[in-house]
Length: 310
Image (cartoon, rainbow, N blue to C red; front, top):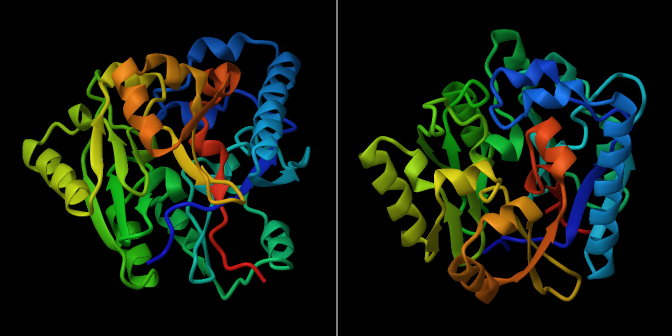
């Protein structure tokens, strides 16, 4: 059975982090007021948040593989690499179709080539042609993977199209898709599944309240429980504080770490913190600028490299 976690984490150090107008329509987590912030100061603050996160992850034994973003082309969301690429234990690398045109520019063959020096890359699955049909699937933003049981959870949205899901399923040999609808408190479709759900090896954090269809809600809960997951529910309010946007990783000694933002951590009840603390050490970071301007949090900043090491 494949491990759910890895200690190899890809992160992209930003050079032009800013509010992205091209993503704002479908991402309710972006704070439109942050458009008015000074551009240089926003980048400076985001860089500080990023560097602190990287240094603390490395300090506890996580292999953080950092690539510097480039000034050109302009990619204000490059700090969220998990949307354009995913890496799998089979040696497969998957490239994804992205909704925002300026996010498509984040895809970098040089990164995959460089990773190939230390990891086995067997094949690259390229789904990006779906962009020509305006059909999208944004990596492990759209897909929350139970890698151990080969189940991909996906809430349908403008950034998660059923046809691309089916194409991904065919390419990934043996993965089963669990798809459903999910909305926020204003009945707006949740843009990425990973803001309402996180899957660990023996637990799952999920905002079941966001799944309006009761049959689908039950289906998701039963699917999680059938694979031995203890389901820890979060509220819509906690989801809005990025409490669903967590990621369980490991360090080089295979010690479990649950990474989240301070906003997410502060929104949890003591009981939830105690529960999660039984499964992993909780590590949280102040990501205020990245969250408000970018509409993404800790999980979105990390692309797990599950490729076999050479």
